[in-house]
Amino acid sequence: MTHDTLTGVMPALTTPFHEDGSIDFETFRANVRRVEREGVHGVVPVGTTGESATMTHDEHIAVVEAAVEAVDSIPVVAGSGSNNTEEALDLSRRAKDAGADGLLLISPYYNTPEPAGMERHFRTIADTVDLPQIIYNVPGRTGRTIAVETTETLASHENIVGYKAASGDLGRVGEVIERTREETFAVLSGDDALTLPVMALGGEGAISVAANLVPSRVSELVEHALDGEYGAARELQFELGPLFRTLFVETNPIPIKEAQAMCGQQPVTMRPPLSRLRDDHHEELRPVLAELGVLE
Image (cartoon, rainbow, N blue to C red; front, top):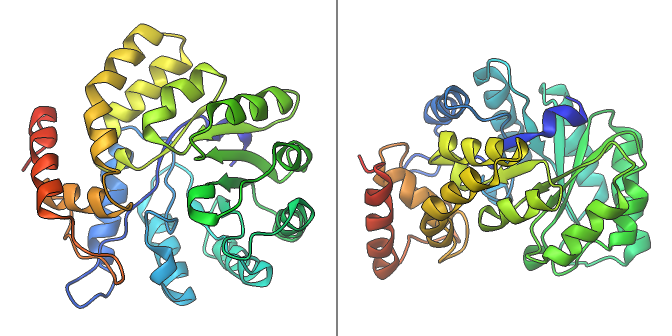
């Protein structure tokens, strides 16, 4: 995987579970094959959307292996981050051994390191594991944003090739793009509703929740933007806007898993402490899916 292969859409894959909570690998592989057939440019297993926080390390790596087995020609970018640098190193090494083409590394959460500690964390993994790596800024989950200056410094590392932007702060995203323009470094939207604005600033694609459900349409939106066809991209943004909003009425991945179940793509089972979608939100979701023509 190179910087160039980061262009486009990569679904942040959900993980299907059986009713007893075990991983439904058959459905998972079928979903990977489905999104590849529908035009995505890569897949991202065992991230936040994949409920990696509730998996053992062995389960985590088994899901990466299943994704690698299921794809035909697109890259697999494995979530392997942690708030413990040694744990992130172990997961990253094992993901590489499992056949992952790249890594997605969330910034350390809960212990909220200062910029020097944040930089050392990412640099340690990049120095040790020879795979392309995307750093992931999502302060709503982690409690700490990755400083723009830290991102600029890390972008010069040959193994740090991308940045997943999920802060909701377009000013910050624009500054990151501005400061890393001379590097081989791709900025990707991590928020479906902001994919088009991020690309207008110079972003190169998205790690998308909605692409689990409607991969071809999200891919088409991004491809129009990459080609400078912003009118066509806006039309798709407006068409998909209600879905983008509804998929975040509750904690991700609750709404997307409910939507996939309603569309016959997989069971709705989530691991505790996640709960089922509230009844009123369930009723909000159904007409959105009906309007898009994806209900089973």
